[in-house]
Image (cartoon, rainbow, N blue to C red; front, side, top):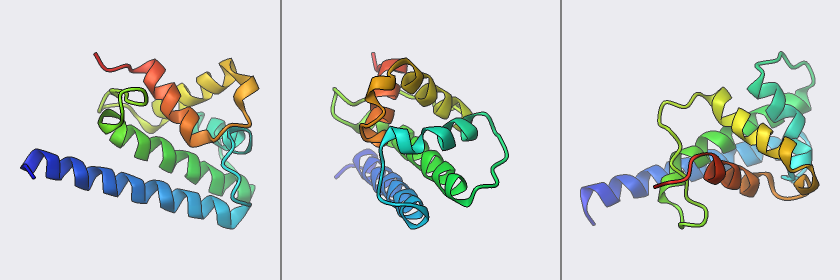
Length: 129
C-alpha cells in the first residue's frame, strides 16, 4: 500500500468513525430515525447558527454536523456516482447550507436517509471534474 493510499484509508476510517459517533448521539436523544425529515430542523438551525434549547434538537444538530463533516471528508474517495469534490476550505455552515438547500428543493424526499441525501447534495453541488 502506498503512502497516499494509506492516508486515504486512514482518512476514510476516521470520517466513518465520526459519522458513527454522530449517529449514536442522535439515537440516544431520540430514536434511530435518520430520515431527512427527522434531522432537517436541527440541520437548518446548525446552518443558521441558531441557539437551541431543546436537548433533542441539540443532539440532532450534532448529528447533522458530524454527518456533513464526515461525508465531506471522504466524498472524493467514494464511488463515482456518489463522489464529490467538496472544497477543502468549506465551512461547516456552508456544508449544511448545501444540504438544507437540497432538501428545500426536494421536499418529497424527506423520508429518505439523511446521510444518502447529503452525499447526493454534495455530488450535485461539487461534482468532480
